Length: 115
Image 1: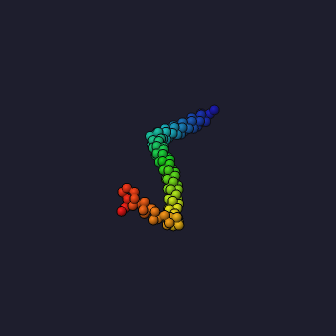
Image 2: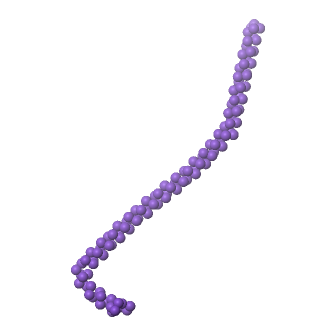
Image 3: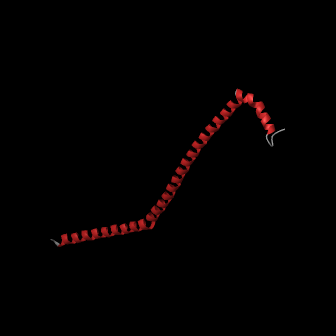
């Protein structure tokens, strides 16, 4: 090899070494940034995500319980309406009207009844 070629090769190696050193320094800066800022930010977001997931699970559970209560309420309202209809039908029946005087007399005769 000629001296000129050798000097050119050494200069290229030095440039490559400088470029590599710059890239390694940038890599170290990025790693420091990752450890110092990004990782804590990710941990914080994970904590927030877990809290939101728990709140969502609780909301879903409350919604299910409310749906069960609503269904039970609808059932009880239907039973109440049926009982009221039955009471109205009973009071409108002939037998209820025919026995009304007997119920009045019984009310007077029982202890604590109306006089």
